[in-house]
Image (cartoon, rainbow, N blue to C red):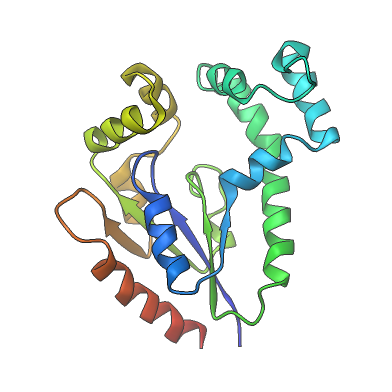
Length: 198
């Protein structure tokens, strides 16, 4: 039996975490790329690599990385964002590969990650699920959730592919625009993936 690797993606504010929770409730093991990359920021060699790129002012007095400051810098500078991604993404994927070796009895597992397509890791997955959401709905969600202004959200969005482009590149699309229920969309995908992974 070959365990399927499934990517769960969608732009900021699309509802990836909600859909991930539903799959988790169904007993599917999930790897949260964003959470894992945050943990990697505190690995000493990675921290020193980040300080090399951004300077010591990126650190709190305690020596930990000021993630808020780091975010505000990289989302204003595509070159620096690329430098950070080049440092972190290969390490996240290596960690994911190692995690997958502990999950071999599963029929399929999911990695939840916002930028699977943008980072060039599409081929690491057997199937990809995209959470589709209109841009304005996403913006409103992020403003409410993160207590940020519209400009901050747009800065982060500019580095993500258009929703329609991601949908066209995905194997499955779940619509989370408030007009359709999510669980009835997840269940048939879950059943199909179980069949393929059997």
